[in-house]
Image (cartoon, rainbow, N blue to C red; front, side):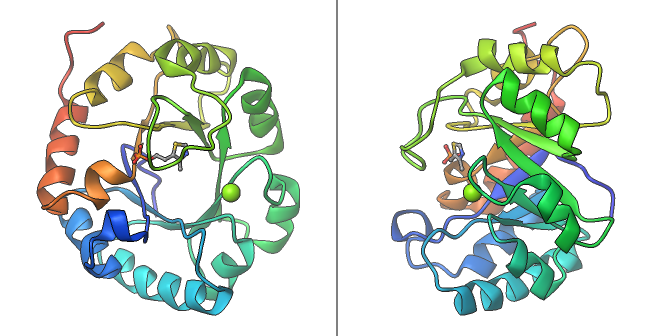
Length: 224
Ligand code: TZP
Ligand code: MG
């Protein structure tokens, strides 16, 4: 499965986001709108529920040929045969995750500094989540807000590693997505995409929201 990071959906099952809708239905609508990666992120459910939910999401993402990555839980990813995991700085480290996952599994990691980004590249991450871009109610305990300038500095620091992917995360919406994509480019390395929670998951029409993002990401912006 090729890794297209351009429109990366991160799920959230909290009431404020799902608004009594079914998680699978919202994710499937987003996939119809053009989402290219789905990360199942669930900070509250028990392990058994996470495994069942992940399995259900996987049956949906497979129909669209889109990889499903599991946040934090390498064991859940292994149990359901997901395409990979997304790790935080406090989760299992990449080297240990590689021992448990199949050789072709995708491993991404959240980074918010040059040091973290360089270590992630050295450890063999497939892609980096770079953020937090902008303040967001979806995740308030973020270590640091780095904005477009901080993102550019990280991209610059890893620009001799062309094969590692990069996605920006945090507070990204239809109004700022072009600025995020085009203002964060370092001379030698750009972002491969954006990771979105609320602007798709909480949208009244997640399919239309994803379609609009896909269009904006492909449209060169007047911010260069
Ligand atoms: N990591 C850094 S910010 C964030 C995560 C998981 C949440 C982003 O959510 P939103 O709703 O797209 O701002
Ligand atoms: Mg984590």
